[in-house]
Length: 310
Ligand code: FDA
Figure 1 (tube, protein in one colour):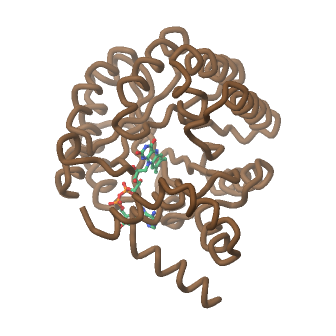
Figure 2: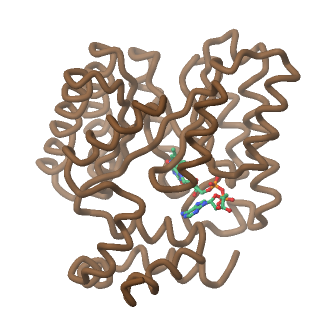
């Protein structure tokens, strides 16, 4: 793992840096590349613009590791409003939530109760709630909460990270549930005892997991594969594999982040693939933004250029 990536991921956990960063206009300018704004209105406007180009959206209110029950309840209420708003505005947006934002650090039952409300509302408005995957210390608890709620809400979806050795086994336990599974490479700083350190191994793992989700047995059980990547080579391989299996383009989906390779997102949609853009918004953007920088340390160049106003 690169030194720059390590430094950026370590920085993402610093409360001091988080407080400092928000007060600098140049940092906020740089962040705007990856999020349309801090408010739900701005996220909804961005979703409307994407819809015109044939792309769906997934909305995420930034935040994690809340320490008060009232805060977790407030976050849940906010997401209920988001689902209602997406329904009223007919933008068809889904939501993606972090369980520590819904109170997982305060207890599994609280996270279950909050997630249950979101899954219920999503079912009622014909949408879907996604559960993000956080660092490896949360995987067991995330899967436990997810499976408790998914029993009653089949459409609930979950993210799995290709960089973890355990993921192949986790996927096997999820396929019979017939749920949505979003595969991503993984964004956290993990030790080699739990995650592949080499990018080539992570890429190979991603492809293997995607192919497993596209097998007739997985599709037959109702599992829906969503591939969360901007990696063109990987996307080409998944498309070629699906075509070779004679699969229709609408049995799986791509999900990409707002502001990253937008032209590729439009092209995929124009080529007939189902594509959703994940739009993040909210004031708590610092740790999330540092993870975006760590994915591509060359992004730091954008920050430096925005300091210089270029
Ligand atoms: P990779 O990092 O190899 O990038 C491929 C190419 O994409 C790069 O060469 C570059 O051109 C472009 N690119 C990628 N990231 C970029 C960036 N930040 N800035 C500019 N260009 C960039 N992770 C996690 O641990 N838990 C989760 O729940 C989620 N959820 C999630 C949802 C969705 C919809 C997406 C797209 C991603 C996530 N992630 C995530 C993040 C994921 O783990 C991963 O860190 C990023 O998607 C980057 O990896 P890629 O697959 O794009 O490949």
